[in-house]
View 1 (cartoon, rainbow, N blue to C red):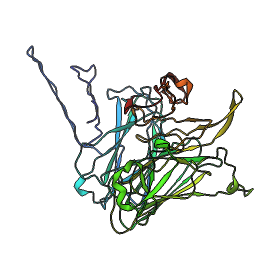
View 2 (view 1 turned 180 degrees about the vertical axis):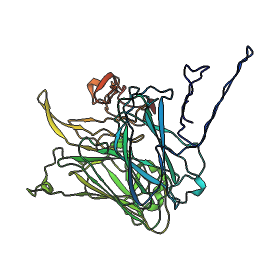
View 3 (view 1 turned 180 degrees about the horizontal axis):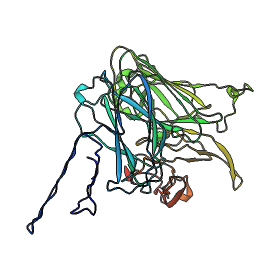
View 4 (view 1 turned 30 degrees about the horizontal axis):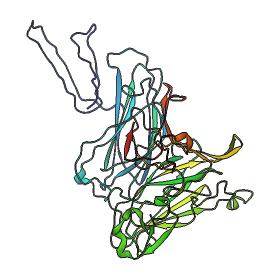
Length: 466
């Protein structure tokens, strides 16, 4: 429900007063007490054509824009709201990306000036495998300021976009979106440094529902020159192959580099340590591409931090999370292929682009990875190389920036940074810390509010932080 067009009132200094709704339904609520009675009120109403907003039938690819007008006249109605509906005639979900966004607001909670996006279609009319399988209350997601909204994938075939601006504002609000039907799985993610897509989230087709049979889906990631791409898996459920690798816990614990091979029937004994090696059925193949420019060089680019945590061409299947690895170049392909039999939930991963920098502190050279901020509503973070040993002499910094009005909660599910007996003293070992950041009113600069060391250095049980 939209906020009040008219706040609770008992009189107006000047009549008549005119209000315009943002939707085809208006609710009036009148309340009287046990004291004196008066003449009451009289309201006249009529249907009018929308001054803004529209209904957009979705095409395979499309785009539309909106910009509010400046208005300094004082009116009894404070806000102007416009509603846009994008719908798919064939009952398919929609993928929406914002290419331009600016909604000035002094309130970071986006209470007055905002853009709101929600899933409003009928679940029964959505026929795609990625559609929701049961009715649920639509979730409102609000954005404001200059924080670009993240990619939105609907679970029904109708998406509602509502804009709210102040009629007396000296500023204009605007957005431009591109949309497409979720009817194909091939996609290309190209971005520049500082883009809201420089880090993000990728999922298999139809996720979290099962992927399709007999499909080949290619996702290409193209970062700026001299950048690298870190892939971190949050979930991975792909049909198992004919063989598996088993991390041998007796040598080196969970970080053991020693593996043994077993038969397919042993898969269910300890799934935490198993993943398939012969991916004969469904598989995700990660391929690092070589880029060249005028000097024809990047194909022989020097690896500034050589370790086993850099991605070469690898293929994964099974139910165990693939390791978190970083590419050697700025181009990466993920090829997901399926056969005609079993299907599962697929994969959910976060990617982070970075331009590594070699820095020297106290006569020690460290590789500094300042990963581009991630604006997604959920994801996963691990160091390079997880769950095996991470590279030495590195500084890895991640920045998570949820949409305006939302806060971030994270759950620590694994933590092992030292084998020293004195685990309460993190200064004696590798360290992990988190810091809360507050955006300024103009949405630009940031102020660091506090800093907390996570201690002890070895996690005994799952912990949640906010």
